[in-house]
Length: 396
Image (spheres, one colour):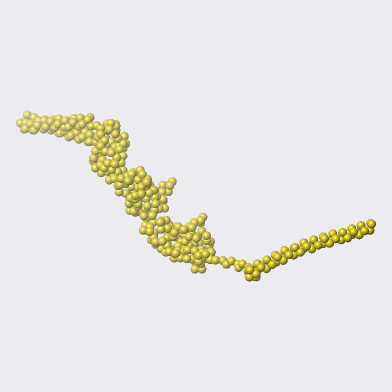
């Protein structure tokens, strides 16, 4: 009984081992099948691509950039100096009281009026002066009567001196009396003329043909020679711009140079010419004054601010667009292309800046190939392919 049970147990154990071995074989078969499927798929993919491995990527070749260049040549460049300043009368005439003064009776003009030479501007009360003038005129008559009487007495005495009734000494006294009377006549006339002149000075007159700029007096005001200017006139209405010009620019200007003056707030320009240059330079601002004469126009108001463009001559120089001129801590420069296609730095000295570009007054001859606009991306020695482009025509 025990033997049968032991034998049955061994048989069962052997069967279990066989089952485990079978399960392991089946697992490996499944793995092998999966690998085979993957291999087939890989082969199919290779067939679709032609069955060749991809060629290795070629090494990139360095390309030489194309860069626009210009040959500036030489052209006439008008040198223009810009300046600002204050408008004023070219010859301002302050007019005040010339005599003793008094109370203003009447003011006859307003700012902006044109006046002739000698035209009354204001009248000071003349009642007292008129009476004094009348008195002086009356004293002339008195003196003339005394002189006539002395002359008559002298003539009668001369007739009697031959008869011995009057001595020669009496003749001399009567002659002296006549001469004194005539002197009093001359004195009375001089005093009358003085009073007329004083009364005339109570009428304030324009010293020349002018434009009235300012009026600082009203009727009823008490004025005297110490009252200052009652009127300010611009002789002939002539105006000027007192332009402040930098020291280095002032040296290139001359008398008669044309200028265009534009008042602030206006789009109109007025033509003028320099008539005087300051002989001194302000030590603080390093500027001098160029006085530009302008014909009268109501738009030109003394005291206003204006800008001027002064033509100071012309020179022959290359002109480049602003994009071609670079700058750094060493100054202004351009890139010039050599015959080998490599760029080199060329330091330049700039001049007049206008709508046409920047004038190069030093550093270029005008026949070089200058990089137009790509200078910021280049370095000295870089290789480029220059493509020449034309410069725009100069503006008139």
